[in-house]
Structure formats: structure tokens, C-alpha cells
Length: 552
Image 1 (cartoon, rainbow, N blue to C red):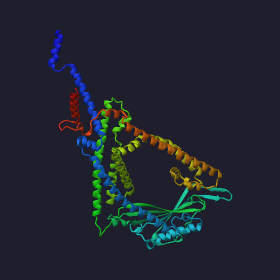
Image 2: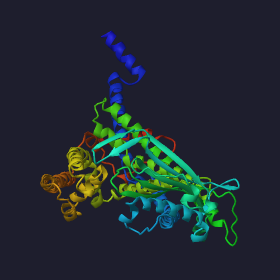
Image 3: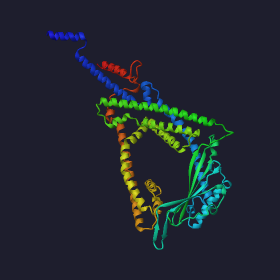
Image 4: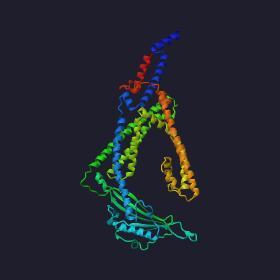
């Protein structure tokens, strides 16, 4: 009895009994769970709910709205400038074909071929003559390339087998497969004909593979001056090819132009101000600053989500499914981060193009175009806060894994038809000549386009192949239109019905949703507000203690 009384006195002098410490620990654990639940629920709130919960301004939402407007304006401005560049390239290519290809007609495929030896010499002679009189015949500002004070020559190269004797009548031949190339230079100011410039030039038609005429012309794109932009200087490497690799008696003639855009060495523009260029560069700097701010805010939200995911995993003792872990990793924020990175890179490149440091129009257009596309796709995230739009977004997200699996299976069947059609129908149908055209043709058939011409253009030179083509095309159309597309639509429809039933029932479908369902505090209840002297966790603990005390 004395020991027990001493023990009682000891507890009385020390303060609270031992079971009170146990209750205190239980209260702390319960408080921590409530605070974690409230922190996670606040993380998944939309900007309006966060404003009511803590009074936090929706800076990310406002920044995205501003960014969409300014990036779209930037893209439209650059697109109009890029169209002038593309138009200048295409029109120059058409000009070169009319200047240097004899009897060229727009769209005339058969006119770009020769069938007689004399015609080949005439076409080469025509190119040399037109090239020598370029200053007198062109309506553009084309000029020869110079190396110092001298003009660079035009080059005529003939590729042919080194040795060969071919006798089709006797069905015998002897040929050396090694290819030899002979090249000759012709200077433009001499105005010679082929016989005068190259008296010893002879074409070996039996062994010849090709004849290539190469020269470089320079031009300046002056149409940008009207838009208060500095013009670019262009180098057009023109290659005219007489292709005889088939040795079929038909030698095709083709002209290609490789374009290199350079900064003009010396320029002077009068009657126009460079103010527009400086304003455009300043506007691009403002876009870069806006994207950096958006990048920082979205990166901070991604980091906060990872921290909350780790806390929730620690609370659940590492028994959290991957679907719940991925809920904390907001894909919309990652999409915006990628968009900001592309836009910043494209804007820097655009500034260098505007100041004529670089001329990479294609790379800049890809960066700005993709960045703008991602920005507009990111708007769907904010439309998801409306209930009628939210079910569509949830359906797309839930059906995405099943859609990917379905596409993988259907893609295997699609590739099998592509390879089969290319090998069997390629020699008899122009739409099956290459794998690329086969894929485009079959994809058009899936969408119901160009069906009759695909069936009708099949050459009936082989009855066996013609019958096979009918079985091939009918089976493909039946399989993909009536089965594959129907199954694809069924996957989307079933997911939509499932999501709709879940929203109507209101029952949580994941462990994370069940965990959050324990918090019934509304955003405007004041339970989420931060204390200036305490952190969010301490504020939650104090409020939880007040609630438990009132319930007791």
C-alpha cells in the first residue's frame, strides 16, 4: 500500500498520469492525419476554391490567359513572315524550271522527259545558253555567285559505268559495276554553246547513269521591306538531273533547288524606320519573361505534389497503388512546362532571326508552333472545372491506357497490310509504290476517302494480281471500318458510361478519394487559412484540438 501510495504521489507531483500521455499521442496522430488530409484536399482544389480557402490569387490562371494571347499574336506574326520566305522559295523554284528546262509546262509530267539522243544534247545546250544570258532574260534580281572578282562556273557531270559492252539482241553483256564521274566547268560570261564550251564532251548512253548540271544563283527577298523587316540574302544551289538509271529509253529531267539563307553583308534601307524591329524584339522579351514566370509557378506546383505524394505514401506505409501516386503528378503542369520551354527557345531563335544573326526559319516555326499548340491544349485543364466539360476530360484520361493498347494491336494488323500491299500491288498501282504512300492510301480508306479511285486505278495486266487486289482491299475495308473502328468507339463509350455512373453515385473509386472523403470542410469554412505566426500544420492541429474538445 505504501509503494502504491508513493507511486500515486509521484504521478501527482509529476503532473498527468501515464494514460494521459497515451491519449495525448493519439490526439497528435489524429491531428497529423487530419492536417495531411486537408493539405491534399487543398492541393486538388481549383483556383476559385483556393481563393475562398486561403485568399490565394489565381496567378497561374491569369498568367496562362495572358500567355495564350501574347503567344498567339507572336505565332501569327512569325507565321506571316515565314509565309513570305516559303513563297519566295517556291516561286524561285518555279522560275528556275521555266528558265532552264526546255519546253517546260506546269504539271506536265511527260514533258520532263527525253527519248532521243539529240534531245538530250539540245536540253543541255539550252541550259548553258539560258545560264549565260541570265541577266537579259530573268525578271528577278538573280545574280551569279562570285569568288572574289570572278564568277563561279557551272558544272556538268556525267556518271556512267567504267566499262561495258551490251548486246540485247544476243542477250549478252559485260559490264564493270564501278561508277566513273567526269565533270566539266563552264563559265557564264562566255555565252558558249555545248559544242563550243565542251568540244570533247560525249555522252555514253549505253553506260550512262545520269547527267547533272549544277550552278549557284543569288537573290534578295525584297518583299519583307514592306513589312519593315530587313531582307535576307538567298543562295540557290540549282541541280538539273537527267536520270537514265532505268535504261528504259525514257530519260527523266528534274530540277531541284537547295536554299541557304544568309545575312546580307552590307545593307541600307531609306524611307523606312527600324522601330518595328525593336518593338518586335521587345515583345519577344516580354513573352520570354512571362514564360519563365509560368515555368517557375508550374514547377513549384509539381514539386509540392511530389512532396505530398511522399507524405501520403509514408502515411499509407508504402501501400499506395501507382494510379494514386500519379494523381499527385499533374500532367497539365508538365505540359505547360514543356510548352514554356519550347516557347522560350523559339522566342530566342526568333529574336536572332529578326536581328539577322540566324536564319533557321524551319526550326523556329517548329518550336513556336508546338509550344502554342501545347498552350491551347492546356486550356482544357481549366475547362475541366465545369461539371459538363469535366466528364469529357475524365473520359479521355480514363480511356487513354485502353486506347493505347488497342492502337498497338490494330497497328500490327495495319502494318501487315502495308507491307503486303507494297510488295504485291506496288508494281501495278501508283498509290502502293512506296511504304509511305501505301500507309497514306490505307489511312484514307479507313476514313472512307478516295475509295473508288483506289479500286479503279488498279492496272489489269495480271489477272491473278487483280483478283488479289480485290480480296486485299475488300478485306481491309471490312476489317477496319466495320470492326476496328466500332471496337474503338465502344472503348470510349464504355469508359464514358462508367465515369458518368461514378459521378452520379458519388462513391469514391480509389483509396486516395476514400482518404479525402473524410474531410468535409468547405473551402470557405476557414479551416484552410494560414495563421501568420503559425504554419499550416500548426493551424490545423489547433483547429482539430478545438473540434475534439467541443465534441468531448
